Length: 239
Length: 269
Ligand SMILES: Nc1ncnc2c1ncn2[C@@H]1O[C@H](COP(=O)(O)OP(=O)(O)OP(=O)(O)O)[C@@H](O)[C@H]1O
Ligand SMILES: [Mg+2]
Image (cartoon, rainbow over all chains, first blue to last red; front, side):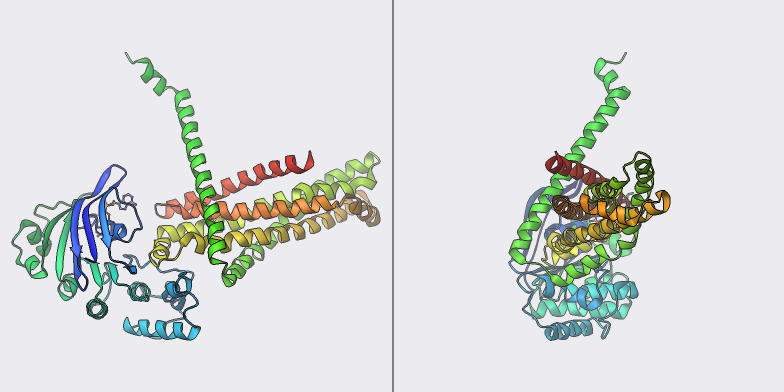
């Protein structure tokens, strides 16, 4: 067990957004969550990371750090890239004073190289493109070597090469530190390259669960509609 | 036919009272939030200490950037008051008391209150919109997910800078106000500087200075705490940032007036 969700229910006011869902992600496994816009994917990640309270059910995570890559990067815009990435190492109670300025510089440089952005430590988020911000936020999230990682559309808005870079890194994290990861994504390439299993959300419920190959088989109305991106099918766009 | 209950619910009086009731609930809710955060901050400071680098940065922002506006507002108020007072006092034969009167007025009330209003409009609004923007762009969530206490990280340097800088601002502003009062009395009413400043000394009580310093520290802390709290609990995009900022300014103004009344009752009756 690394992440286990049981009978989770979340309402915003009277609107049920997550309606009794259960799933598991083991250590060293990547679960992809797919589903149309507004189906509750980001909400699931926020519930697991403890940012918002849930109404009923249970969420169990193994001890250790939970990291999250936000859908819209959420970089600290008053801090430069160096301070953003080293934030947890400098400000966390149990970590601060553990690293010298030199250590921090080395760690940040290494993480930046990893996301293909060497030497931009002194830039501010507003000076970066959307895709660069996304990659910096990725570097910021993984700086403490977390063992549970939640990615909210980590490759959305990235060029194909940067996407591949991030996808490869998600996979390498699962091998190297045996991380349990959840990737919310719309991108087929990301699903195929990273995911061991896929669940599809619709209307707050899980309507499909299986491997990426199962998804591609299109043998249920839901998977068929999703893979062919069709407007016809059981899932309706709602305002 | 509509029933009495429906009739009452439709009436304007009912609407007004239910609105007032709702506002009262919101009012209590906000006070609760502010108090809760205040206690949390004290706990954080005792447990984790203070980051002096960030505190220095916030002090500079609180004190230096607001100084021109604060000094102008306090200075101009002093000019206005002294021009009215001096004329009348000279006519009534009380020229010897102009400096004393101005000093008491400025040290006890004008300096701290006017500075408070100026600081609220400059610093309070900027603190609130800053934190509210961080909230709606999920930067506050990002702090929490990185296991850093977002309240401690954001509030401690900002609130402490208010407590530290506000007394300094008020002292400088009050001194300038007193001097400007002298110049105005001289220009408009022909009062000699000697007469004015001799009487200033008479009006300068240790107790007044002491109360003024405590009072401005409370104002500074309250403005920062209220503004940060309003920003921290913002929600819902650009509109939410606007609402939070308005709320911060209104609440800070109210807090200044209420605290001023409390201090007046505690120390001068
Ligand atoms: N703070 C909130 N208050 C009220 N409703 C919310 C809130 N956050 C999300 N919702 C609602 O919950 C539903 C799910 O939102 P969520 O952000 O989880 O969708 P999503 O699957 O991540 O969509 P997307 O693919 O567009 O990012 C939406 O209908 C949204 O309107
Ligand atoms: Mg989302």
